[in-house]
Every structure is written in C-alpha cells, then in structure tokens.
Amino acid sequence: MSDQHTEAVFANIFATNTWGSKESVSGAGSELQNTAQVIRELPLLLRELRVQHLLDAPCGDFNWMQHVDLAGIDYHGADIVDTLVQRNSERFAAPGRRFTKLDILSDALPTVDLVFCRDCLFHFSHADVFRALRAFVDSRSTWLLTTTFNYRALPRNGDIATGGWTALNLELPPFGLPPPRRLIIEGNVTESIVYNTPNGQYQFPQNDRCLGLWLLEDVRELLQRVGR
Image (cartoon, rainbow, N blue to C red; front, side, top):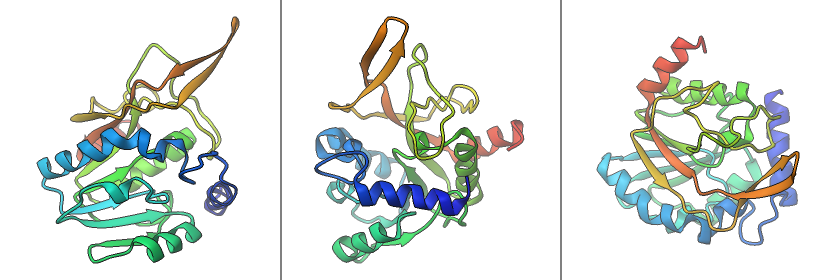
C-alpha cells in the first residue's frame, strides 16, 4: 500500500467516523471509560522513566490524553490526518504541547525519551508494523510504549490490509519481541473481539489489551535478527 493511500484510508476513517464512537472519532478505545486506567497509570510510568520529551504517534483526537498529567513533559502529538492535526492544534495546543502531521511509516521521527504508539499497529499489515518499528528505532529514541494483547492461546497476529484491525501480540511470530519491561493493563470495558468458529460466532472481551514498554535498543536487535 502506498503512503498516499494509507493517508487516504485514515483520513476517510476520521471523516466518516468509521469506528462509530459517539465520544471520539478515534474509536471506542479512546473513550474515557476505556482509558481510565491508562489516564491513572501513564503518569506514574513516565515519572519512573524520567521522560521529558514524549512523541504520541498517532495522537488521534486527543480525547483522553488531555486528561493525563503531563506536567514537566514536552508533548508532541503527531497524526497522519491533516484535518485532525489542525483541529487538535486549535483546541489543545499550549506551551509544551504541540501537534504536527507525521506519517510514522515514511517520515523521519524526532528523537525523544519515549515514543507512545497506542491503538495503531493493530491497524497495520505485518509489513507496515515492521516499517513502523524500524521508524521508531531509526528515531534514536529510548523507549517504545505500544499496544499489545498478551494472551497466546487465542488467535493473534492476523495479516490484514492496513486500515483493518487484528489483535497483535508483539511477542509472537512474526514479530518476536522480548517480553516487555512493563505492562499497563488497560481494562477496556466495552470492546470485544469477534471470532468466527465452526460452531458459530462468539465474542471475547479484550481482557489482555495492554500497553507494553520496550527499550528501543531491544527492538533494534530484533529487527537485525529478522533482517528488517
């Protein structure tokens, strides 16, 4: 998929509210009821890691992040959807908080203490997940905090067209990252994963939806091993 097509896919999702949330164009995963634990836990982790510069990519519509205590942190929100970036800038820009248009699959990313990439990689094909991981590593940033589903017995890591959705466990093939240094269990209360089986369709709560913390040097070593 070309980078222009990727931008068009996500711009259309924003314009049509494809994910159907009444609260956030970034989807139900960005609703306050599904981010309450992240809002509480994220500042504690950022302080523990002594994060001073944070890249939030993609930042989405900033629906829940505006409630996170980011005191003393230089926040850079980035997204591929230009209209969304402009709207965020108008509503939320402030000293120490800015928004810019960036494509994590093709643009050079700034060097920061922590790259925060929530609810993004599971919308990517396997090839694009690796492209994003390479971009994070090449930014020469220190940490990556990103979404991972840590169950192993249920289907994970389907290869989709970018713009779709699948549950990703980044420790499993084809990715094979080491265990994360920390996990924030999100406690998503409204969303389920729908599975089609020979006995019919069933829904499984997203109980294993987490934010996993990786040292980007560990990600670099993984990419070298798999030739990415």
